Image (cartoon, rainbow, N blue to C red; front, side, top):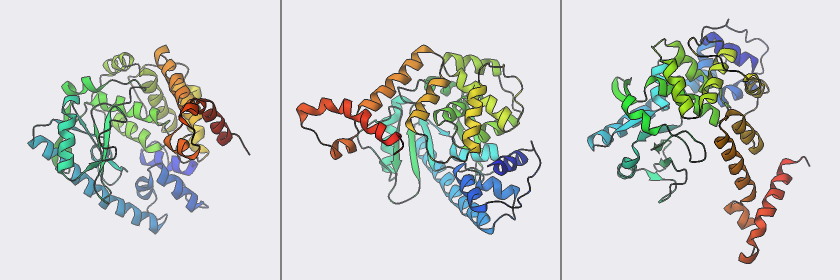
Length: 354
């Protein structure tokens, strides 16, 4: 993992190119794949492994197809009078990395205004996409669509987070949207400050488990475009996400060694920075455990309302059985109240060492 961080810093021009001698190549490639850095690694160390170059070429081909599909869908929305913004994915790849081939993405994210969500859904269904949860708004802020056996997955957003994870940015982005270029064509997306803020919140929601999310931020800051840091900070405070923004900036400074001028110092973040760094250096891959996730969520929030919500969500999860658990251990209707006692016992059995 140290080699991977060194290679990344070399690519960002914030450190020397590392020596690839005596590497555990299989372990390195597994970590690079998890952290979304295989294309970057192939750029820094082109002779490391021929298989790595072939993977990068395959990803470049797939990313190009997905970018073209995104443009097709945005054109469909525009022709039918549904305003839409491209989020993350191909847009960030070309804008920040200089090529759609250098940043991994699996979904195509599109944002529409809340009142246009059902019209946009109808257009996606017309284009051959089917929702994963027909008739349901399980997340409260987006639907997920797929099309047959194809790899393209579309997430249609009308918000940025679940009701339980407070981040109500959606009403502010439309007046500040701006144009970008993707494969030579103009598309609309978030304004500069909102790009940075949403990347910071997204990384925190996922505990910064993957490094390329932080690379996005580092590349955005290195572009040198005029950034109103005071306004950004005030927006973050109003949206109760200023601690998440401050953590993202601290991670860019400490782990990627990229300067971030103009941002105010923020106290008491050293523990969270070390926590993310340790997770990376220990080579952990895969999603976080339930205790890890909610401990982190509690730490990145400062507003008492948000911390109370974190605890409330955790209590609901540990006392509410999933459909799978109810099917595995069925109880008669009059005894189902016992699930609230049994569910914590099942969780403890899974978490405690055997």
